[in-house]
Length: 73
Image 1 (cartoon, rainbow, N blue to C red):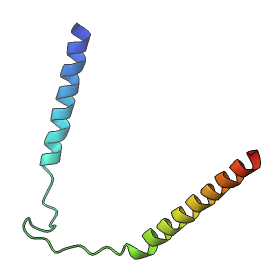
Image 2 (cartoon, helix red, strand yellow; image 1 turned 120 degrees about the vertical axis):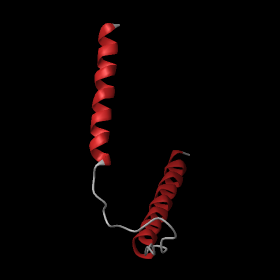
Image 3 (tube, rainbow, N blue to C red; image 1 turned 45 degrees about the horizontal axis):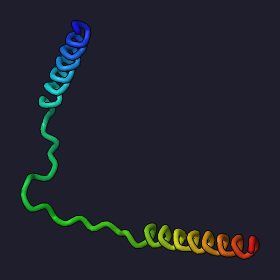
Image 4 (tube, rainbow, N blue to C red; image 1 turned 60 degrees about the horizontal axis):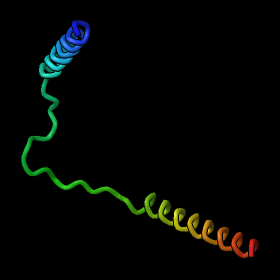
């Protein structure tokens, strides 16, 4: 019981000490809170290729299952 309490106390102290140093960081100069401008992310290129390849792979798997079932019968 004493070792569990000692381990918990040490862990808590370590977490408290490391979080204090994070609070002392200087201002990053980033955007201020409020209404940030909307971010525009181009999703068209990679996502559409990924979707198309997923559909093609799914169709290939379905055809392979159908051919395997017909071969068994």
